[in-house]
Length: 321
Image (cartoon, rainbow, N blue to C red; front, side):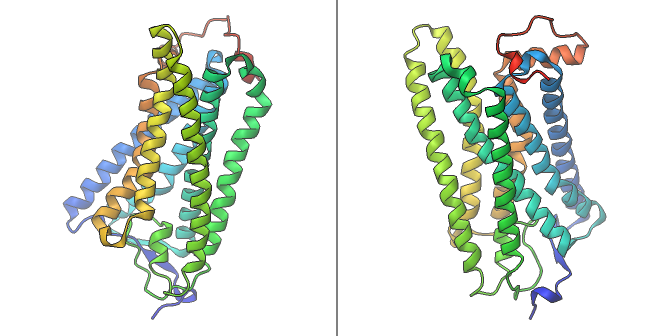
């Protein structure tokens, strides 16, 4: 029988039964982590360096890359170290910090994706009011609201989760500390408080999702009214990457937290958690850059050392410093 005060560490899920599987786990995660660091870092540096990209859309994209780096850096380094050194232990404080940082980055990213949907809606449906509705101050306030809401959400969930009495051991059946796995260790009559908080958060997330859906309904209606095929193609190329990222993020996250218990198994939980915690930060830069020629050209100028042209686009002054 355990209680919260007697637990000084948690035991994460083993990465493999054999040393070969542990090393395979290490190299796969290392490759994914380095790819995420390279691509997200390249986007951050490019947007900050190139004056042509100092617009609201790229400002939000820079924030998204920062959150992606934070999200993947919270989970993978510890998991890689555990595989390399063949250890499962993580301290109680370390587990709480990991859960807080992960929920913070994940929540802030979702709220930021909602803000980005609004940015695309204004750009396509109200282009004449774009500079007014999305000025520098408004964009900074919206980004700060996304970060601040994510911080508050993470603080509430972390404090509430680790205040529950833990009566079922200290073995976390996941490669990082996450709320559903910690709740499985709590006393049967104590987890309802955190469950109610999760339902409240789910309601907020659902409201953001409805906002995103309504925004894209209006966007697609406006795009279909564009007379030129080239104009429609350009509008779709601006929106489809964001819609792809939102869909991947939501589907994996909802399935992870709301799937029936009959579908739960350690292997399935591991796959689903990788889908929402590792895959999006690694593929988001690729999704956004594959269809964005402006960003590709800016990255090429940065890599080759060519300075941007002195002439700025009309809206580049929005984020000039």
